[in-house]
Image 1: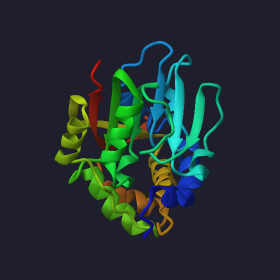
Image 2: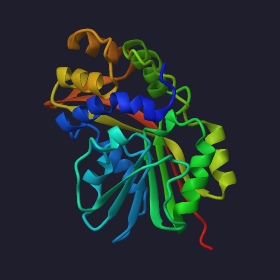
Image 3: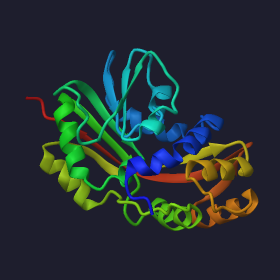
Image 4: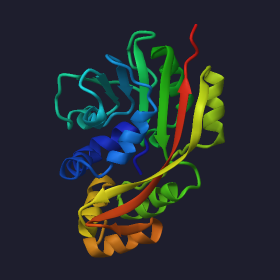
Length: 251
């Protein structure tokens, strides 16, 4: 099993990016929800950690500068270049950014691959301006999302999957780092697709399911873990992440 984030997404980054490119609106609720908690003002600087291909840039106003930070250079390079997105390949606990240089730090669905979360919290505290906001949206320990990843994805991905999910200790570590937690609860929303085969194809690419069966059978297995329903002319796969919003004190 691959254990480190950079190893995982150097291997999986191209397939992940293909999923995001073929179905760019599938996770729009996920990104919009996290960004809505970032307290963005005009001209703000946002650090996305880990960023993958910099997908947050698709949901930010044009006057916002995004710093996409990822530990895998190969994954980082998958994303499209844009004037308001600066890419940095660096460790999440050692970004080389200046002290108090960003308004918000966002981490969406990647932190469960990072073992030393406390060092990540300390780094975000360092780079955030006083009054800045940290937003984390990731799977919660024991949740349906975590079970889906560690059972279903682990079975069909030859690299396996064993996540290090958010729990009570996460909130305690964030608090001990010096943040004030202002939101701390699970958020539910759908991933939206044109139809069920599209949902299955997206999951196969996004999660690197190289051991997966035919798409129809794959969709049937997904529905055993997560609620899947038709809504009008769309297919909704219900997803849940735990969302933590925290503020750096104003000095």
